[in-house]
Image 1 (cartoon, rainbow, N blue to C red):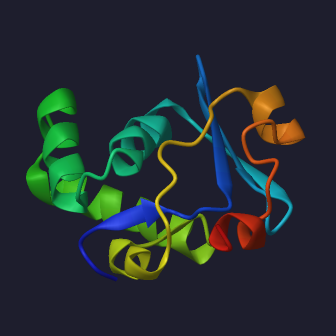
Image 2 (cartoon, rainbow, N blue to C red):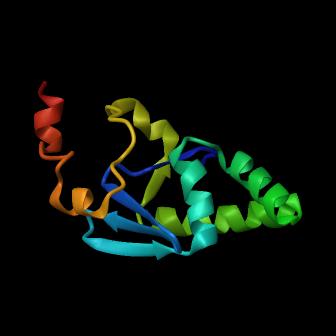
Length: 123
């Protein structure tokens, strides 16, 4: 697994006071993240590398860089296994559409994503 990962295009995120809810619209399942998971998710969605995320966790929570790196790597492996993230290198063939909407109703009813992937690609 490469150093930089990105959020898969079929994942929608809603941040909550307790963490985050991730919706895989392609696979039809939802995943909830606790507060620490959402602290890792946010910089990941902003394009930060796993090393940058681990460094932030180490300084924020006063843990060793080794422990923070191990925790971030384990978390990212779980996200990748659930097809919620993918290597950033694969983004070359995809059009970047900007940040995903964060409102749950917007995500569920697709206000922002009313066009299909094929329609967007044909423009």
